[in-house]
Length: 70
Image 1 (cartoon, rainbow, N blue to C red):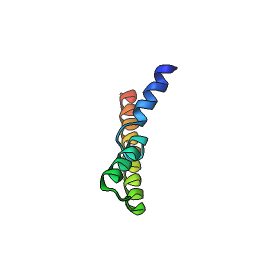
Image 2: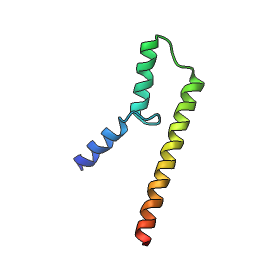
Image 3: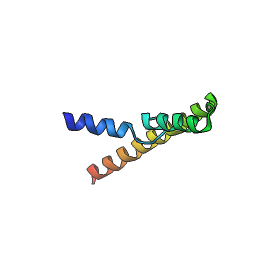
Image 4: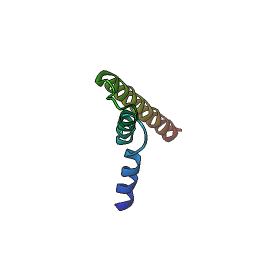
């Protein structure tokens, strides 16, 4: 159970926009620039990252199903 929790925590910190690591990266960029990122741009980045994550999930699921069928 601890291994699953640790794995989920590390995965969540990946530098990928819809995950916490992506939010941390955006905050670091804001800190370096000394001004906030426009909310619309941040939302666009988050939505594109979420779409990529869903696409990756569908791709992995499709591959798993085709391997089971064969």
